[in-house]
Amino acid sequence: MTEVDKNPTPKKRKVPFTDIDFRRAAKIASIIERKKLKRQQLADILGVDITHFNKLVGGKYLWKTYYLEKLAPFLDCTVADLLIPDHVIRISAELTADGFNYRTIEVPEGGLGVASIPLDLKTVEGLYCLKIGANGASPFNPDSILYVQAGSGTEVKDGDFVIWVDDNGFGHLKIAKFSGDFLILSSPYPGKPDVVKPKKYVSSLDRVHSIKF
Image (cartoon, rainbow, N blue to C red; front, side):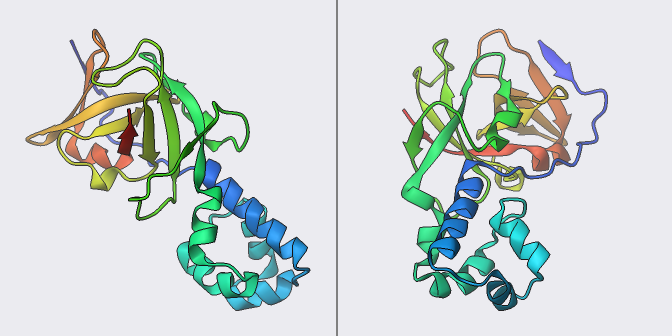
């Protein structure tokens, strides 16, 4: 069974803030308050106005790595300390055959506990974490942990596990396969249909970076 997309143009999807982005902003805000640093001075160091800086600290704007490189010496910490707060990540949702509400990865509280962040990650921007539900998905065990990077579709290769977001805002685990000018998204859950998209649609996917069985 195959679902062919009747509207093949991919919708441009903004890369969401994830748990780790919110915690990074909260950690930086805490250090600034504890050290009694002047926000205007820090904004000048970054080369941004105070409104922009306040939105960075408040978790409204994403902390880019080059901002952290400029700021870290004034906070008496390393860039690594700011990139990976506490070296753990919240497990945002349980992944089932029916998918999961993609909005849950943007909520900075709740979730299903935490998991350690893999050491081989080159960047944690856009990182989120999912747990396989009790009904499983081949070849995973129930409670397997998936580490996913939002907005990483351009890195997807043939056979990679990915998260595809449907029109109702639900994320689904799929296996990406390329065939000519088409992208075929097959499900590891029995009985779920393949979804066929134009090849360019790959840019809208989130790639599963690593798996903890």
